[in-house]
Amino acid sequence: MKIICDTHVHSSNSFDGESTVREICESAVKKGISSVTITDHMEAPEIRFGDKSVYGNAVESITQSVCDVEELSAEYDGRLKLLKGMELGEPMHMPNLTKKALAIADFDFVLASVHNLYDEEDFYYLTYTEDNIKPLLTRYFDELLDTAKNADFDSLAHLTYPLRYIVERTGIRPDMEDYAETIDEIFLTLIRRNKSLEINTSGLFKQIGTTLPDLDLVRRFRELGGSMVTVGSDAHNCRNLADGVEEGIDIARLCGFKSFTVYEKRQPKQVAIWY
Image (cartoon, rainbow, N blue to C red):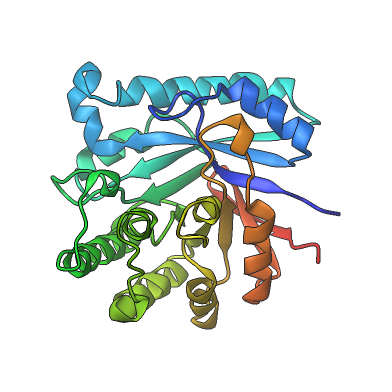
C-alpha cells in the first residue's frame, strides 16, 4: 500500500505561508496523503522582539498553528492524520528563547534548521561571489554541527539550504567534498543522538534541481550508519503539498533505507517504503 506522508509543511501561520491549515487538510485528502505535519516557522531569536518582529509575533503565530491543528485533527480523523510540529530556526543563537519555544506546546515533531548565521540575514537575502561562498558555507556547516550536537530536535532540516540560492544566483555548484569532514561529523552526531536527517524535496523545483541534501549525501548518511530519514516538501501553500515527496522516498530507497520516519509525540514511527 502506497503511504505518502509530508513532514514539512507551512500554513498561513508562518510569515511566508499562504494556505490555512483547513485548506492544507482539504488538499491532503484530495491528493490521498496519509499524514501531514504542520511545521510552521518558529525563528526562536525573534521571540525577543514580540509584536515588533518583522515576521510577526513568533509565540502567537506558533500557538495559533498548534490550536488550528488540534481543532482540525479530530475533524479529519479517519481521513488524514494531522500532526503538530514546528520548524525551529537557529536554535543555538539564543538558547533561552529556544527553551521558551519548545515549551509552547506538546509538539509531535521538531524540525531544526539554520536559515541565517548569527547576526546576519537569511541566506535568501545574501549576495554571493566566488570569494565569499566557501567562508559562508564553512561557517554554515559549523553551525549545523553545533545544532546537531546540542539542540533539542527530532530531524535536521534541508542540510544544504544555502545551495538553493547560491546555484540560482551564481550558477556555481559548490563541491561538498570541501566540507566532507564536517558533514560526516554532523551525520555521525545525528546517528549517535538517534536523530533523523530530512530529505527536503523543495530543491527539485528550483534551479538546483536536487533534494536538500542530494542523493549522494543521503547515501553517505546511510553508509555511516544512519537509520532514520524524514521526507518533507517544505510546501508553503496547499498547491505544493507533498510535491516531490514520492521522489524523496525513492531517494531513501535507493540509498538503502527500507522505511522513512514520521514523528508522533516526539517519538519516531517507521513507515515501510512500498516498493
